[in-house]
Length: 263
Image 1 (cartoon, one colour):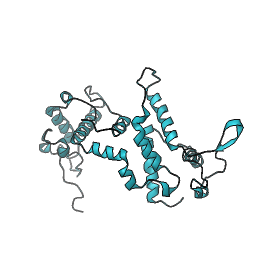
Image 2: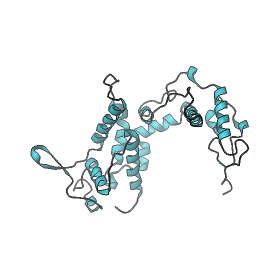
Image 3: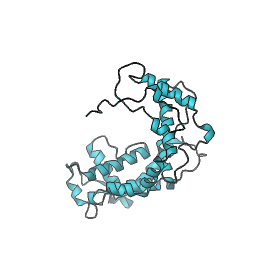
Image 4: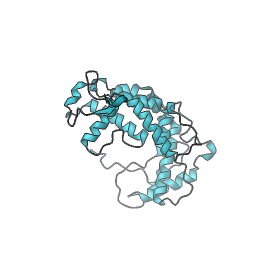
């Protein structure tokens, strides 16, 4: 329709999750007609059991069907979960570079996330999962519990600092931590949160000296960090995330007063 509602936002959330999981759009299209066709291919064409009012949507066409057995026309039926699993399998095969000796991919690792996406992408807004329902979904419950762990937060900060230094050195740094893909992060939320995000042991953790060096680089590269104008950005104050085990970076002038704090 033409009205933007909270149900519209939930649809967008489902499409965004699918995009992150698959590494591409779930509903691609070169124009609005082809994009709408792709939508109906996956969520099913409008009919008496599938939000028939959608036939009044702009760019809807009665010619949305596939040729089935014996050349008979068959309308697209709802198949969000099936389509997502199929596209995920193709995506993983592509990232493995056709290596048949690679460890077999287990779709069940993502069953919770796929279930959430399926619940969000209903053509009928009334059948679409609400924001409250999404937060109560088991996948989200596991994910929230995982990201709230102190180990995850510390590891996130270390990864972020790694990325920051890699950008500053233009990729010349050779000791950067192994990257973790978004898919691995999503997969991690399907089970009990690990001790840390990369499964590293304590011996691989970043030393205090390294963290101080990273903090210094951030301060030097930030306006106001080395005598420049204060940009009022408190983004680089990571003291609370680093906790007691991390270095005291407050002395490096990273903590700044927000520009709009008086508003």
